[in-house]
Length: 330
Image 1 (cartoon, rainbow, N blue to C red):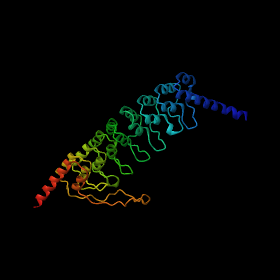
Image 2: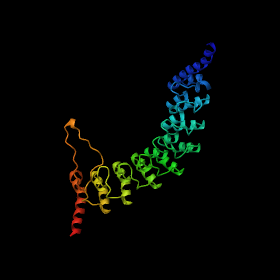
Image 3: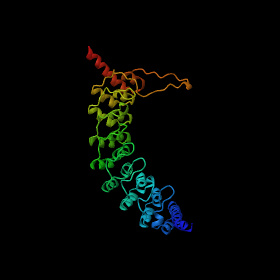
Image 4: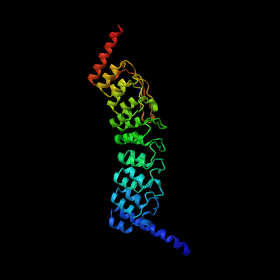
């Protein structure tokens, strides 16, 4: 019994000292942390699998991170991957802390339970210089997480043009498709940053890819109100007759968005103002408890949609085109 206790006491002491060290870290008490931080304490595992270094990173305190590393803290000592200092640092995107951990040779290939690596996490939050260091240290540019997303997709979703350019220059696959049917270009469009969409497109992003529910790139741009990108797709020969999940072609969508410049462009490209909307692929449910009427769908032309909701300019453009079509038939 005495021998067993003697073996346990150092571990208990280290755990207690580690808890005190974490308190000092959370209170930004550098003097106390300096007194408590030695190699054993700095690397002691806490009940959640984290270490004092994990806490220093979580509090986003570069000075405390530097203090612990100088005391001998190992950058990968955490037994819980979710608490691994480098992965935590990537979540916050603090370039100074990330540089300190990379200087300490933190494992850039370590994965969280969801399969995500530091490169993908940093791609949406940290500067390109950090991504370059991760790649130089052995991070795989096209590694995928548990849902099939790459670092390029994470950068695209965040609208980080600097990171997109770096990853593309380092060989990231521009047209990789997730199991759900999305490409980096889709993520870039959804970011809300038009420059991100253009960056991926100019790098060879597939403008013809059709995503879930039959959504095309130009339709997604319309949903996201990225009308500049949508106009470029229309000028490049987008399918004017394709119906989106709401049953609208591009002219219908432009009318509903009240965008005269897009309506004019579409008409110039040959869009038919008499073409009718189709039945939406979005499922509507009848709720009997609220005594609501069953949803019915009526096919409408762009002219009818404009009469209901658009500006006078849009209505005029469509009326002129309709009149021209009538004259052409005579």
